[in-house]
Each structure stands twice: as C-alpha cells, then as structure tokens.
Amino acid sequence: MTVTLPSPDSPLRIGTRGSPLALAQAYETRRRLGAAFDLPEAAFEIVVIKTTGDDASLIAKDRPLKEIGNKGLFTKEIEDDLLSGAIDVAVHSMKDMPTLQPEGLLLDTYLPREDTRDAFVSPDVKTLAELPKGAVVGTSSLRRRAQLLNYRSDLNVVEFRGNVQTRLKKLGDKVADCTFLAMAGLNRLGMSEVASSAIEPEEMLPAVAQGAIGIERRSDDGRTANLLAALHDQETGQRLAAERAFLAALDGSCETPIAALAELDGGILRLRGEVLRPDGSESISEDRTAPIEDGADLGRDMAASLLAKAGPGFFSWRA
Image (tube, rainbow, N blue to C red; front, side, top):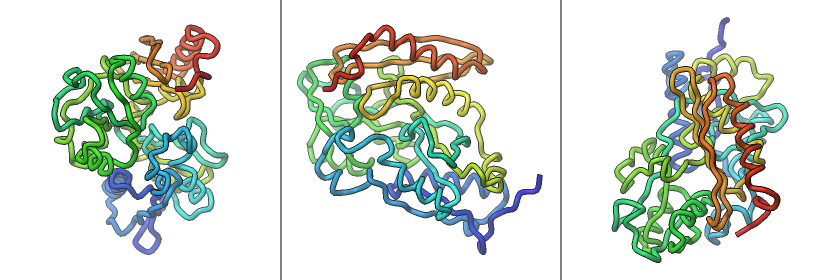
C-alpha cells in the first residue's frame, strides 16, 4: 500500500505536553518516523499543548492528584486537539493514559518499551533500605506511597509534585530526604546518573504501562495509521494488552494504588499484579503465566481474583 508521506510543506503535526520528558518522547517519535521513511525533521511539526495537569497554579499548591482529577488531567486537551484536527497524532506516557479513549480516537501504536523500574533518588543513601527511621519521602504517586508504607510504615511520605526537574529541585531544597522517578524517563532525558539505584520489581512493582510510549490517532485517519504501522513494537503491545486489561477490570484511577508488570519469555507471558490500601496497611498480589495470545484474558482474570480476595470496601477506603 502506498503511504502518502508528510513533507516540509505538509508536515505531520505531533501533539505533546511541554515538559522536557514529554518533548523527549515526541522527539523520539519524530526520529523514528523520519528514519522509517527517510524524511527530514522539517516533515514534522511538534505542537506543545498545555493540559490541566500542567497548570502551575495547581502544582504550586502541592495538592494530591486525586483532589484535582484523574488520569485525564494529562490528556484531555491533547485529545481535544486531536479530535478537532489541530494535530495528527498525540504522544503519551502510557502510564498516564486512561484505559478508554474518546470516541473517534485509537491508541494502537507503541514504541519499544524502556526500563520499567522505579528509580530511587537520594543525595544521602543509595537504597530504600538504607533510609533512616522516620525519613521524609516525597512522591505524588498513590501507588508508590502505598507500597512504601506497606514496606516501611515508619517513613513519612509527603506530597511531591511536578516534572523531573521540579522534583529534583525540591530534593535539593531538602523538602524531602528522597524521591522516586521512573528509570525510563531518566534514560530518555540522558539523566540515568540521577538514580541512586534502580528498584527491582520484586521490591516495588511498577505502575501499569510504565516505560511505554503510546501514539494516539484518529480512527478514520488511514494515512496516519499507515505511517504509524512502521513504528509499532509488537512485544510492547502484547505486554500492555495484559497490563491495561488488568487495570481496566479494576477500574483503576489515580485514586487506586495498582501495580502490574507483564514480561515475555518465548511464547509465555508472565503477569504480576498488585492492589493496595492507600495507607499501605494491606497488599494483595498474584503472579501468573499464560500463552501470549491470552494476555488480556489473564489480566482480566487476575483482576477478578484480586477483587474477590480484597472483598467489599477495599477500594472505597481512602487515605
């Protein structure tokens, strides 16, 4: 099939948030498209879109995300522009994405997944285990908060919002003794040395789809679908199908501490999933395998099992 290629006179418009990490992900998308079709950078236009989640007035108040909204905080304005035709594709961190897309949009292209682990960042100690009793930990992630308190109830967890650079500045200003970032983000920014250590999933299971970049398009845009087909990483898609089915069945949001990681070994998919009470007082987890083609079913089945184990009221409780 002949693909109508973008050009400097008719560039493909790539929508993104404006943070350094979001821009790095948009640039990676542009680079991969350019390499796939031998196109110059001028054949693409990076369009920065401010989302509700980027509102400095909200960030400055250090309000928990659950008090402001849900995952749509980082996507709504971008998806509105995609639907209106103001942009042709939208580049997202998949861990920020709701499991359902607005009518008329499709999210079916994933770049090769980066490191899925969390990064422990501290100027004083190398690992989480070395933190002194009562240490102040900064994070805006309900998942990380719950996992930390489940692991060590003596820690003092405080709200710590903002992009990578903002959080590192807060750490330098001694607002907290340590914080957590995603290794994938640090790697994409060329800042892997910032991590004091990477936390293995056996110690802290990552967020659903952590380390993955997704590219969203209009469902009726065949030209863009043909372009993006050259970028799609099948293994990442198979892994995310299981993780996001797990999340969707749990009706996950920023208010529910949920973690999951799917990995492939030959034709077998391994899925680890975890749900926690927000205060870390209880954690329920499972570890299962299934053929790759059954990954989404495995995610849904595991979610149903964890819901049954959790019992009534587990997810309605709030810290």
